[in-house]
Image 1 (cartoon, rainbow, N blue to C red):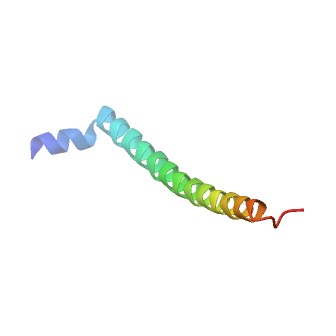
Image 2 (cartoon, one colour):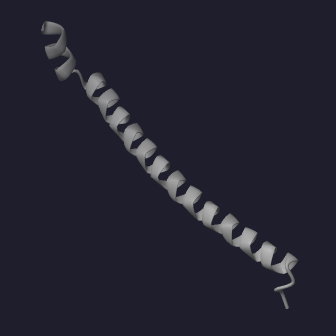
Length: 61
């Protein structure tokens, strides 16, 4: 119990906790961004596939 009390009062521990929280927020934001990029990339390749299929079938100009 004394260890926890000392840890709670320690400036170094507080700094480490703050850095940990900042790192967690950056990680969450990066994961969300990667999910959005994945959806956009998937939609782009679906469009490219459909357009290529139409062009090969003679549907193009």
